[in-house]
Every structure is written in structure tokens, then in C-alpha cells.
Image (cartoon, rainbow, N blue to C red; front, top):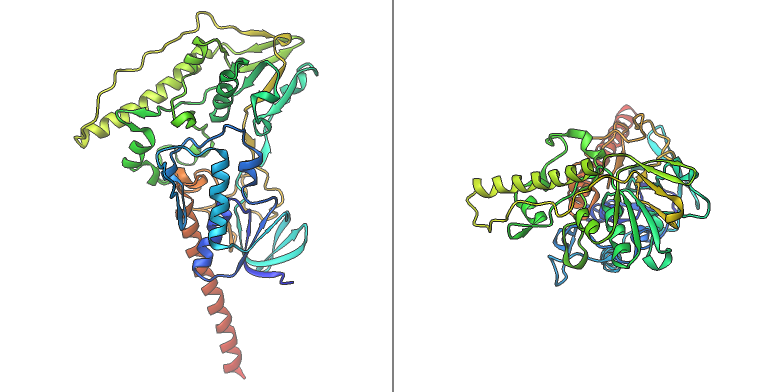
Length: 422
């Protein structure tokens, strides 16, 4: 069996498949290693009612834009899986599923990959394995009574699999959507509210994504972003595509009976303690949503666009006095919506910073021939999403092709020198 390839791609999700498509267009031989199956994370690590928070028209994998009949809708989990599998079927990528890459090292002018099916080498390698590798659960979880069921958001599937009284920790996109899913199912939900911002959904006649696209936000590179590289560590704005898309306002949930608290602080025996910052966190989320609206207002005014006027936002609920404790006996389960951490320890090449993040420029590292693809804000907001991966993959494909040519030209120079010398 062939064990050397000009390019090996690690990861067969939407990023790895996009890279493969672009390399195929350039007739560059390559191979993809996928640890599981195509679309595994979407199928196995999302809950039953999961859906995109960006409209379907933003699904623009290279050579395979969304072609369904609901461009302004939001694909649900099964449709997302079908979209990715259909993409792979459309160009037949050279992929080996069920193969784990255990180690990558650089040895002279090539990379050596240790995999679960043997050793391989490559001239160039693209790491397209994402960055959400390990569920992040705080050590504080160890202090809860053993009778309480504890799961991470990646394990959550449906309200049917959990008891009736549930504490959800974290209010990023997953936390808010899972809390809503449980709430709509009639569960008694206690929600520990963090500092994540929220976004409007519809504003002045359009989905907020349409406005941001028209304003050029999705073309803004990280180099031009006012927050520069720090934006990579910022929490995503919470909003949902459920039932055709709507805004998430936690105050509405509170009016309907959901119990809101500040950030989880401590567990002391049977007492669960929260920080006294619920109002602050709610106000901050609202302020961010309103700042997005003001930016849209300025764009509309500057370009003299005819758009309906909307009244200012008015909070529908305020905490009278913040509840700072909860009895552990009042909950039966906890869903930790506390994010993920990356784990690139298997890439034994010196490109990482002190936090384990790879140093790169648009995915190109300082190590000749090593690239990353599919990371959040690799280059633009859409780099880790369906909307921007095509641009990043094409850029890397051009880069890989250019370096491949340089290597070939160098090899021919050596041959010519030898022939002339003889």
C-alpha cells in the first residue's frame, strides 16, 4: 500500500473535505485521515433539536453551495449531516475513515505520521481537526452530590433522557439553546448565567446576518478586526435558528418560570452558591445586542436605505433580589455548557504558544509545509463555519501548490547540477 503522499489532511469534517476539494481541483495527490466517520461530530455530539444559527444561504462549501428550497431557513441536525455527506459524495474524496493519527513529527524535508493503521509520510500536512477536542468541565463538578446526574453539552440529546429538575451551567449558544429545549419540554430549569453576549435575530426588516453580510462584516479579516487575535477567545453571541429563527432573551424565560442565577461560584455541602452578578450579566448581554442594532442603524442612515423603524428594547423582567444559593436537593441533573478545549499534543512540531494554540498566518505556520484549517477566526468570522471555509481552503490550496512547485523546481536544479557536473 502507498505510504507517502504529497499532502495528507488530518480530519474529514467540512474543513478537511473542503481542503480535499480544492486540492483535487489542482490535481494534487493527497489523502484524508478521519478518526470517525464523515459528519461524526454533527451526528454524535449535537442534541436532537440542534439547528444552525446562521441561515442556510451561508452554507457555501467550495463547489457545493446550499441548493435547497429554504435559503433563509436554518438546517436542523439531520439536514446538516446530509449536507456534509452529500458534499463528500459529490467529488469522492480520497478519505480513510476510522483512522486515528496518533503522532506527527517533522523529519528533515518530510512529515512522519503514526496512525492506527501504520506509518505514513507526507511532504505537506494540513491539520483540519477543528479545535473542540475535549469537553471542558470545571473541577468544581467533583463537589456535587453523587446522586446528581452530570453530563456535558456534547452528551445532551433530548429532555427525555434527563429527570425533571435540572441545573444548566453556562449561557453561550449551547447553554441557552439547551436551557430552552428543556424549558419547552416542561422541565424545571435553573440556569447559571455567564457573561456571554446575545444577538438580535430580526431587526428592521432583515435577519441580522443579512445586515452584517451587507455591511461587509463577514469579509473582515482578523488583522483588521479592532480586537485583533483576542477575538478568537471571545464567547459567541447567543441566538437561535429554532422554529425559523428567533432571538433568545433570558428575561422571557424568567417570566415563564425558569430560575436565573449569576455565575456558578461554589458548592458547599448541600448548598450551591452563585455570584451576585445576574443583573450585570443580563444587562451586558442586552447592551451588546443594542450596540449591534445601533451599528445597523448607522449603516442604514449612511446608505439611505428604506427600512422599517423599530422601538427601543425594553427589558421584560428584572431580578428583584438575586438568589445566591440553591439547595442541591432541588436539582437532579446538571448540564455543563462550559465549552471545549483543544488538544494538539499529538502534533509534535514546535508551532504552539503557551496555551497550545498554533501560531499561524491564515493557517500557514512557520514550519515549512504544515498548515491549520477550520479554526475559529483563522482568518475571518466564517473560518470555522460553513460560510468562510471555502476562502481559507482555496488560499491554502494555492499556497500548497506554490510550495509543491518550488520543491519540484529545486529537485530539478539538483538533477541539472549533477548532469552538468558529470
